[in-house]
Image (cartoon, rainbow, N blue to C red):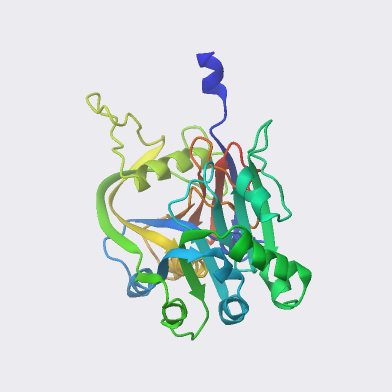
Length: 361
């Protein structure tokens, strides 16, 4: 039995390579459709000081908002849809809810409101949905999708009245929400003033900057995704190494280290210094896209670094991973992606989700 348990896949990992200049490169689409991001990290080998352009982007990674006990019906109000959903990219996610136990809600920038509801709540609302793919033999969770764009154009329809009645009277639901809104030139105080009748706080992401010295780094060749014995490491080996580095794990495999026995894959080289940045909060895809573009421009001038890496982790309890793909927690709740950017504008891409999720896009 123990042997069989060890064989159970703990995550699904897709590795691929492309070039940012390729007309079919899907890097932008993958960034823009991974909506609810909790942590962004990047690593630049052979770098001790961050450029002004990169530092400015890092410092401008917020704001986002926390609203306490916000009634769900506020998100289907015509004024909210007109002010935020139709005039930019609006994101929302319930906070401190467990996807496998609690009711959870997410608002996507395409105007879709995704609800993951337990069986009792689903039946009480009377809304139409589908069984969650994580329900097992006995369906205990249901997924409901509400198109706010469609609703806002039919305010007198029976559908809008039924949903509004369900959220206001039949089964009033309140949640703590994280909210963010992206619109070029918009006033930052708009969301604060709109929800001024509720307990709302403006928050900024937490930023950790550090320089790592004498860091063992895998040797990579951009054209060899699978690596070559004694010549270069594979994308999968790099995936594990990046996870260790971004977790601040020790990589020396000392015999008296009881926390981690992991060591850098071979072949490797020791980098005298590397710059590590981690941003934690509610981080919009639009901000991440700009950061990725700036990391690509890092090699516009000759650099010692052969590559740079960007890692993005989604909220473990978000009801979706990419696009509208259902996400569950199971053993870890992971859904993340990494870009490894090479000096010739080639890139490696890691896409990873838990074993219960659908394969990454």
